[in-house]
Image 1 (spheres, rainbow, N blue to C red):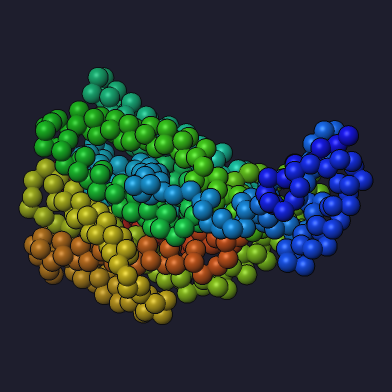
Image 2: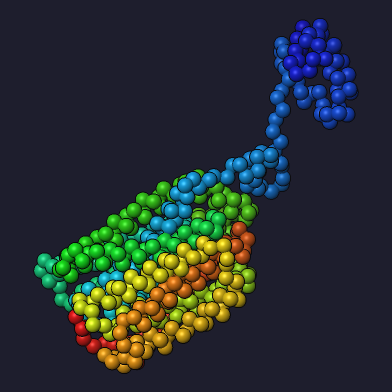
Length: 494
């Protein structure tokens, strides 16, 4: 004997005397209701040894041959499964991480007064900036080549290792100079070596982090740009405070670099948390789904699977085709950012740091660097305004920045008796240079991620970073030529 009980339909009898009666009743019930519900009675009941009970309706999942990230949630839920950035904590986190990969270089730039004093050379700003730009550009090129083979997190971790080596080397060098003295030639070589490590780490991390943020909403790319600007302001304030509170230039420099090390440690711990967060893993899964779930030339959170049988040459060809495809979509933005950073690195920090001033103890270069970093931050913050500069306007406005070149050169030439004397004019020019660098450097970087598909965003971030660093390198090379033309290799004034 089999019992049947239905709790959902009052017309359905609670008991059947035999299995045949049950089947007959089910058939008649299906005939009456199939036209109105479109469902079979067999879908509503379950047969067991003793009881037939109705099953609750199951959620409908869209089934396709190809996996999509949206299939992870019922169709009626839509975007409800998307993680939220409560209190903008992830935005702040990416700001801090963006500050982290520019913190070491800004530390070297802000301490240029110490380098000039220690090595008796007024062209240290040119040397530090040029060495850093060359190594950064080389590191970015290597990073773009290895984007298919080495995971993003491995490259970022390598960058932090390079940063810690450079900052610890400088701290130890200055400390040993205090204790027992170090030959200026040896100290100069250590400084250049530390600058090289800083450039390598910055190049690898910058391209990786922009690719990292490319899979997230565009505001996180802006967060990294803001972080870069905050790094410069933090380091400048750090330098001013250490110079004001501690008179000895060696002791205050040790404390200055030690605080930069603390900042890098904070970034390392924050990165370890971010990479495991649900927020990042959600957007990573969405990117994987958009690219078919494969680690192709765009997806680089994980290295290329070992089972891939493509030859190195075919991989290179596919990568070049992909880069050309993405470049056609963002070429105006690429040339715009190249032009912006070419002019910036041509004038800053080299030319700006050797402007003649009557201020004592090397304070004017520190003030100029602080003014640049503050205006750069304000320019980056301006990218959050609702109005966005069109691509063509960005290109045209970038050309106007070339007028700053003769203005600052007239503030330097001729040496010790410039055509534009005083500190006001070069200070205003540096403020304009910094603001336009912040705004016109951040805007194309954020716009590039929106001009391509989800699966192309990491590649777009890498290409934009490469063009930005190419502009920095060309600007530094031109600044070295200016260094020779201007003859800025004499003795320091303080």
